[in-house]
Image (cartoon, rainbow, N blue to C red):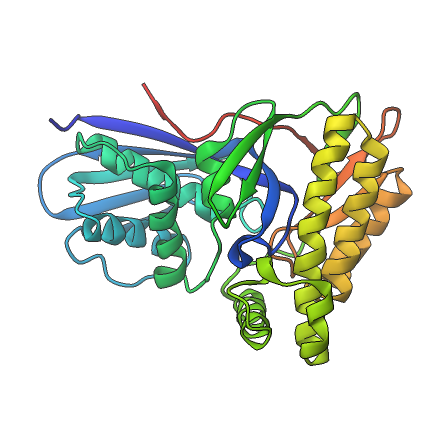
Amino acid sequence: MSTRVATAFAPGRVNLIGEHTDYNDGLALAFSVRAGVTVSAVAGSGEQLEVIAHDLGARDTFSRREPGPASGWRAYVRGAVAELQEQGYRPSATRLEIRSDLAIGAGMSSSAALTVAVCLALIAQGGEQPPAATALARICQRVEARWAGAETGLLDQLTSLLGTADHVLLIDFLTLEAQTLALDLRGFELVLLPTGQARTNAASGYNERREQCREAAHRMRVESLRDATIQDLHMLPDTLARRARHVITENGRVLAATRALGDGDLTALGGLLDRSHASLRDDFEVSTDAVEAAVAELKAAGAVGARLMGGGFGGSVLALMPPGTVAPAGATVVSPGPGAHLIA
């Protein structure tokens, strides 16, 4: 039996380390944050669905049966409705109300948070049970690819769905297994500093990088770059070799970061963030002048490590600040919060 109103919250995420590894069957350490998107699905009559994005002061109205294409935030909402129906769900809400305290374009995956929250709210309002987290993550991934034009991996969706307060997730994207690890920073703080350069996956070089990784794996005759080694790089032209080298070494840095957290060695963790950024800048070439300026500002303030976060080409920079340091103006402290859930 459907309910009159169902409300769901889905958080954004911070990727501690492991960038551009998810669509290469690799590894990442990530956590859900306390900010996110809240969506209320309200029952009514008729086939039209009215959507109100309160924080944007914007609306949309479309047919639930045939949502039709759209751009911007509307594409994610319409895509969620369409993809749910393709999977056999029958959304019956006639109004969605969206509220968010998550910055758009900051590299914290506001798009995945929106898609997850819309799906959970619509499924619950219809009185149906959601699929397993991995299956729901794949539905949301298809929304990104088919409706927003971004061939993302599953990092954002899985982290939003599986996140736990005060913990990070070690995600293996080959098996889709996630291990929960306590995050004890021993007085250090993780902060995000916006670069002032908003980014979107579809409009950036994200899809191009994904295609380059696919081509590199094909030329090395492996299923994905998870199976490649540094010794295989001689088989590739320079650009593809550098893309593959980033992925291979980044997987190693994820494992090293996991050990550093377990040992309480925050200085070592900071060094890994620095090396991750250098690889993203030099081998994967997804940094910008605005990103580099933000990294330099954080390092000057005393950060033991700083790196661009997310797909690159703007967004925010993540830094690890030791006790007694003061982050630059505009930086915010981030910590793990609960994953996506229904709100009574």
